Length: 292
Image 1 (tube, helix red, strand yellow):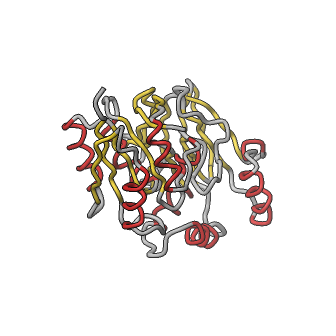
Image 2 (cartoon, rainbow, N blue to C red):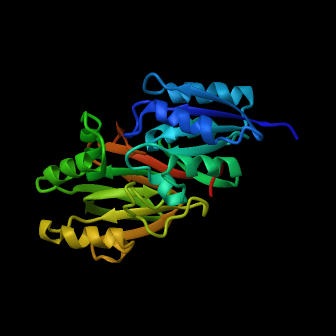
Image 3 (tube, rainbow, N blue to C red):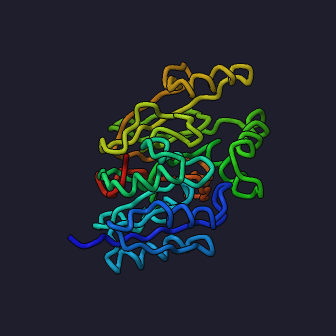
């Protein structure tokens, strides 16, 4: 058999590792006996999607996102229901999908996973006409994502600072949720539609979520008191956030959520202002991805 075609798409401003170091890592550790590979750099928002679309047209076997969850989303949406395979070299801040899948954060070890080429056919999701691969969310989650997008300093501490500042003054919103043939009306701090199990930073919000079960874990959270937040944070990191009285998790393949006003929706870390009614659904087994 001949060598497979492999394209690495590097987001040069993602994470703390310099672009040249990422390129050097690829050149040092990619298995040249298995692959004919190329390296592309993104130059602006949405450029990774354009590159990926062209790579799919070329019939490229494997397209690798070298970046964070935003880069993964930009590339993955062009690979849905195609023969091209997504690879991930985590190089962002949260790296939520990579953590969920067990892909190493080390550049060398992540590239070694690409070399091995083990694949999984995973689910993806849609919110109205927007694809998400890991998580989507509305409410406080969407607000924090919108404010985080405006910051110049990236990373967990910046995200935590915004969340801590906004939390005390945030009032839970009213939602009408149509799910599994039932209609729920309630106030919530946020509603997360989880394909993978976490926001990133190894913070599982949906501990039982699976990327290959044909379902989304819908996490409906009430607002705990500020003094309870250290306990809640601990339960999240212990993968027991779903055991608290504030959180309800419902598995479903399709959900409709309505609000009185347009709200920010977090799509794999990108905040998008959406209509008052959002339709969320899973696209089962729609993306080929390399996993350890």
